[in-house]
Length: 283
Image 1 (cartoon, rainbow, N blue to C red):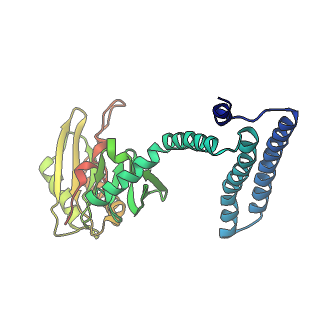
Image 2: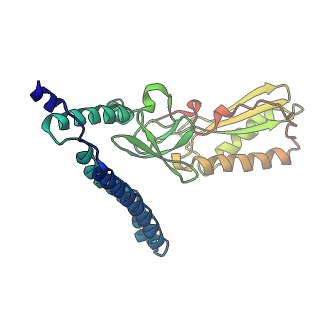
Image 3: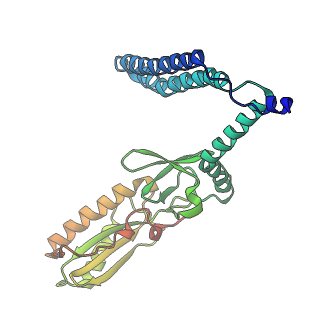
């Protein structure tokens, strides 16, 4: 019975000396974290270039090392360092870490799935939730997407499980772009359609071996025209749409075609922007 009680004992006796030791360790940990963070930030703000960012990157790493050191001192002070106790503590710690990292593991598994199914690859223009841009790198846990605003967004692979992935070019060089025009109902529709097609045909960014489609849709406030065409390179999509929009507006204005006066509550079809599901295409 005494032997069983000895092995079942998990915590050491907490006396005044132990409390003083714990207090000193906690106080030293707080002081070291504050000093290291302020000191590294002070040094980093006085540096330039890559050195500055490397010093800032050391702040969380230094804080983590201080916390690990403090735990390495506190745990043996509170828990009796026997084999059984260490196995118990490590088992509980492993369960806690496993539960906390379930999303990380899910992203790793989804990364393996993405390597097989290839929903995206470097060079693809994709949209995942509200993020649209070019895939720059496919890692084990995340896919790196560079947005048109030059932001680099790291999207975890686990989005594959419950979110749609819109791939605009799907590994090819063909990406359909859409330029929209909202016109007053009083106009010659046949002439407008031909004029917008000519605008696309004369664009310097047009990929000639792909079709050009001008779609018209009647709305209560007027007529919505869309030019659907392909640029030579997917990276030219925004230049292509700008070119179509500006030259199309110039041609229509010169012909006296008026723009529609949309009411404040008019629902525009925003799904046909660049990179949407309807703009998918590949060679």
